[in-house]
Image (cartoon, rainbow, N blue to C red; front, side, top):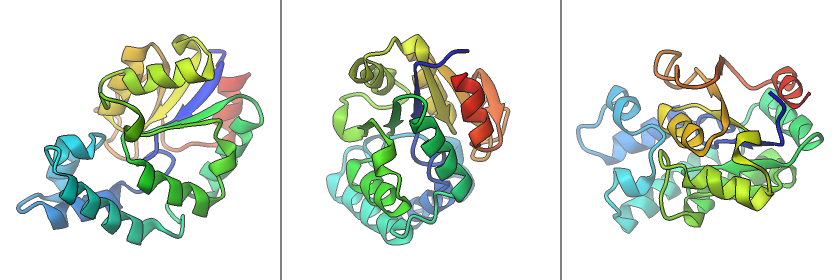
Length: 200
């Protein structure tokens, strides 16, 4: 696989924050358990989860930002891998999250300048699992979608990237290997070595 560009999902992939999201959603949605969050909602947009209720979405983002504002959900190994990718190819962030929650984490982790392009839910009309986010990323990067290597941590994200025609590396830390089986390959974490292999 020879990549033309690399794309990272945000929640659970670049930012190891799915436990944070599970905490926030279970606090906000009566009766929702952590297991049910991962079963029903991981990878989906807030518009899907809250049925478009803008007040609830804003509250959820505010609660999330309070917990991740220091950038600690992006570990050093991931930071190094992203910087290495940026030294080799155009790098995109393609997220079902909103710009207001992505930007603070990128700034705090020191990675904002590593990304050629940032696509969030604000930029699309159809979120994951629809392919629109990854098709838009390929278009703006001026690469064939088949040349896009995508890192994702949910089955929803894998479905989006695969439908766009991308090669998908599935992280197993959020949902496990069984639910990520549609990815082209599975890894436990993002490393410099994996990035280098995919770019060579």
